[in-house]
Amino acid sequence: GQNIDQPTEMTATEGAIVQINCTYQTSGFNGLFWYQQHAGEAPTFLSYNVLDGLEEKGRFSSFLSRSKGYSYLLLKELQMKDSASYLCAVRDRSGGSYIPTFGRGTSLIVHP
Amino acid sequence: DSGVTQTPKHLITATGQRVTLRCSPRSGDLSVYWYQQSLDQGLQFLIHYYNGEERAKGNILERFSAQQFPDLHSELNLSSLELGDSALYFCASSVEGTSGIYEQYFGPGTRLTVT
Image (cartoon, rainbow over all chains, first blue to last red; front, side):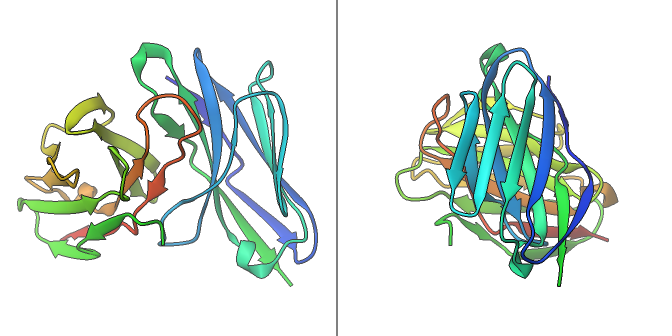
């Protein structure tokens, strides 16, 4: 199985930068996803990393270090609408299953 | 709009009852996944179907079952319902069932309340 760890909650100010960390333990790493989920709504895909390094997509960037079992999601120029839960999900190929396992999510509160 | 549809949006039922949740994947997606999300457990994987065949099972109770039909829509059946089954149930679809970026697209969910 996998162990995925994220902070439960973070707060930040509008216009600022916030980094949400995710650590994981897995035997057959096959990719890491970040999803955004507003309360009561469906998760929506943000980013995917399978190789080490930084992937940038507009205001959002995601970083991966496979040797450290570590990823972070960086959100720049925060807006109030960024208040949501951010889910880290790790896909593991061991056992023949490629289903992503989700962390419990980090609830981000952006205040004015 | 992800292109994944789920019905019903809300469901309120009593303990011991049986319900069926329905999901239609995005056009062209062969994989359907079911997840349960409760406040204290996060998003828990239940089961995965690919082109009509069961591919993987997660933490799915024996009281729960699912199937994917030839038109690729899927149904999740929950029976002998208990209070603890109250949760949001999401369906997701993707193009492929194995490796590759193939991110999952989630439906709006069905909120099940068992009283």
